[in-house]
Length: 180
Image 1 (cartoon, rainbow, N blue to C red):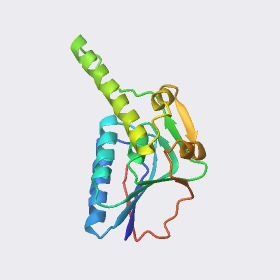
Image 2: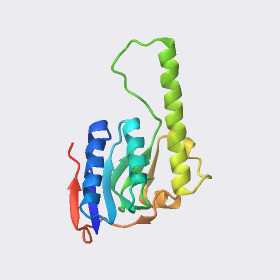
Image 3: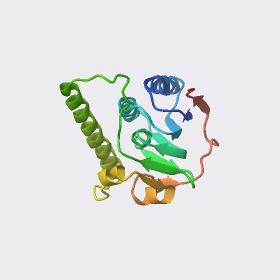
Image 4: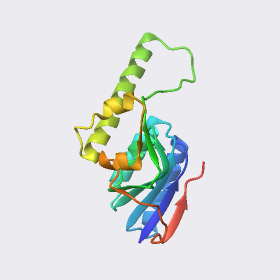
């Protein structure tokens, strides 16, 4: 039985915790496959990678569907789908990674640590795109650094999208919403 989770929120610890709970509820309510309708401007890198690995751990097929915009770390979540669909007219934004800081005071060692973490997140982002698209020839790092927008057809040609089709709820037995 197909269940659909609607994730139309920023990526942060709160929305991802809620998303994980919804996915587990779907499983306990008999989901044999999960469709994730996603449109997100991205957000927190740690939360995004957590959602990716969580979706990959599920014992059922996961279909991700870009409803409109999948941007920044939301691309990592989107790539967790065993099948990845995109609405015609949707877009994918790949752009340089960044962090916001709540404090203006940091010592040199902490700045080095943060730099290494951003470098590692960049490497992990590129590895997800390489492995899930099965296209090591794309130059994902260059596309990220160039702040690249891909439309649905270009994303399909790159292996990010497995099919371009309008989203539907026709086969969904149950719908779940992440609130933000």
